[in-house]
Length: 197
Image 1 (tube, one colour):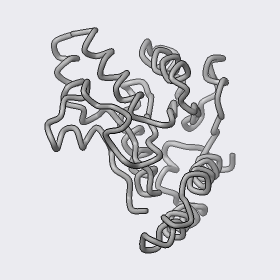
Image 2 (image 1 turned 180 degrees about the vertical axis):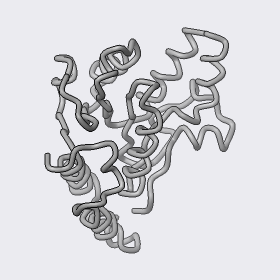
Image 3 (image 1 turned 90 degrees about the horizontal axis):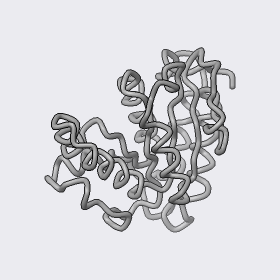
């Protein structure tokens, strides 16, 4: 397995409208849709990069050009379609939770749509977050770097077949090593996540 990609970036690169995206458009087994409030977009980008470096595809809407056009024209139907297509193209949904998340109208919608679509839902609490809305406790709750690493390690074990491990150079070992190398102080996500949980 190699470094993951942001499927929204693939859409931008190939000029494919996000509303045409379907689950069968990509071959990877795992894609994690990152749900967040707009004020936390820089944090979402850093966490998304970390997850991609661990070998997983993500869907992070920062480069979804169709969504950007829909937002600029305030086209609620197109915005909704873009969000839903991003979730449909993903196998998992991870909600990034800060104290500001409770102000979002879109995060609860994304969680509800993902739950209805049978997506595996996890919530990752950002640094110093105390409040966790009840609807976010329906899936796994990750409360820091250690639990994020444990979560990603479990996904690696559950979704990578033995043949894939041997086919790709360093595959499982490389991504597992990447996660292990980030278990000490000076972790790349220290600014955003608590450590010892």
